Image (cartoon, rainbow, N blue to C red; front, side):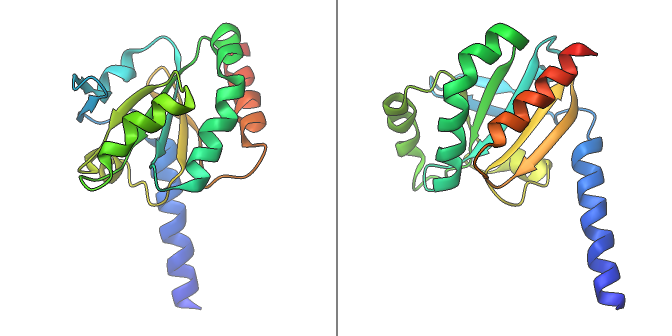
Amino acid sequence: MKLRLSLVTICLLFVTFAIGQNKLPNVSLKNLDNKSINVSSYNNSSKLVIVSFWATWCGPCIKELEAIKGKYAQWQKDYGVELVAISIDDSKTINRVKPMVTSKGWKYNVLLDTNQDLKRALNVVNVPYTMILYKGKVVFTHSNYTPGIETKMEQELAKIVKK
């Protein structure tokens, strides 16, 4: 019983931290053009920002980003959203990222978290892991992929814009 209570407490603390995170940390990542971007700059964005952690070897990640792709242009128009896809591919698989992004036709801002510094700083355990930020605050998170999650994300975007 004590073990179960401890596990529940740890899970609640993790969720509280993830949702209560007020700012993205001061972590610099490279984009596909090898330009360094500090993710904390998104804290000052007036746009809604979707941050999606993914990897080339993660089938559910690809499915989620593909599902979002079908709605992304409309989301940009309706909600002014920007999607930042954070690849957690390591040095062994990092060379697969740019060809995959190109072949999929993803118009996302792709950043490379090769050392998983941002992933660790945000306590991301599993991918895909996606969050929506509004004015630097995390307002929605989910992990793993389920078909239709893009509809739930759109509902969240609509709620935020109406506020």
